[in-house]
Length: 90
Length: 293
Image (cartoon, one colour):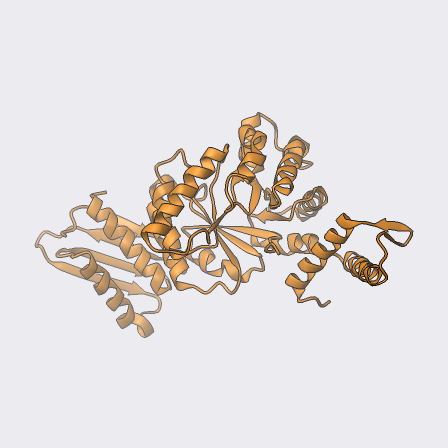
């Protein structure tokens, strides 16, 4: 899947994460992570993002993840919501 | 023995902080809301988050209830498709008005259980009655399925439907409360009262909860964690009630040994309903506090 529209899921409240997907001009995939727990959990969060992008066969797009201390299951939920919305073209 | 349901705390299904902390706030049951607390554009997001919460978290014995969207929307089947496989304790369908509504939901749940090879009939229902027609049909709703374990009265939508003014005293819902309690008890299930919506009015909350308890409700919903403690207190038997119930049970056991049919305690006749009531009080006490003060 190529990200065709700008879609968002989640929020910037504590314990949540805001996922924003944007199209790219050059068919490349960019992942941009900001997290309040980046020092300790960056690798773990990146792995979850990679797994979800693989699950949805994402080939290109700008994936921006702003984490406010979300649990893994919240991060997965927000990524799934955003990617499903992208699939539906919302 | 029916499960104790003194408090049911509503938690918005799309708020991770509240969703994951809901079970440590002292409520007997927590309602993850996919309906009124969620805007139309976020239904998908809340559904996925609640599903992930169900498969991840250990709720330490707190009963988990999912309020799905109403059957006149396009969301309720998607809610059940995603939530049922994660085995919540209870589904709360809103705006229930007839036994046919319950049968439609039950049939859909059964289909998912068969499709996914789940244990059948394990997930129960607590229908939300919040319209004049729902109140009129409360008994047939209570008897519509063996999954129905309680009726829940929702006074806000109900008073809007009645064209009545919602007041602190609650006179406008007196008949509906009575009707729901009678329907529930006639069907041998529990009755749960509507939440008190003024978060800052503790005195009003206490009065309103006492009215509900005195009318026969088994518990009350809460829309704020701050209401949980007071509601729990009111729906937990008092020391006097427990002592009296113990004496009733002792008296009846003694009478049985002595072969007496009818007995009296403090000059009052003790008959079967009083004994049943005493056993119920003791069972709540044992469930809530492990039988100790």
